[in-house]
Image (cartoon, rainbow, N blue to C red):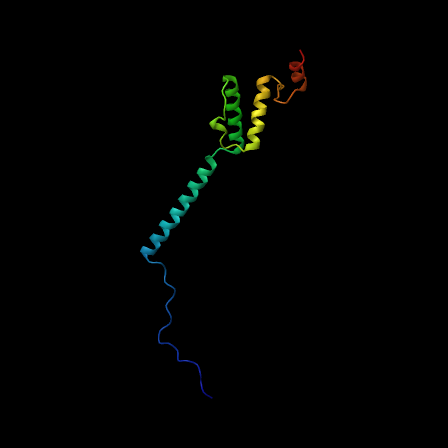
Length: 117
């Protein structure tokens, strides 16, 4: 019977090498940079106003504009969706006319009182 196996090597194989000092330093720097970018991105995202905050600011700007007799779209309303802006304008106009109750809801009686001579 013949042995078809290759001969055994003289020395055992070397274990997988660990990163050298320079490679390890580069990995640490890359990981630290990725962590810093992630934390910075999250902080930036959290610091941005929510859509509700933008709408509330637009609502205040429209109320102030009506009191001052101004016209046009206030800059605080630039990021408000078109349909929401239209609703805010109507709400501000009704508030200026005195057709809203204390809770900011439309009061039909106040409107009818204005309409009757």
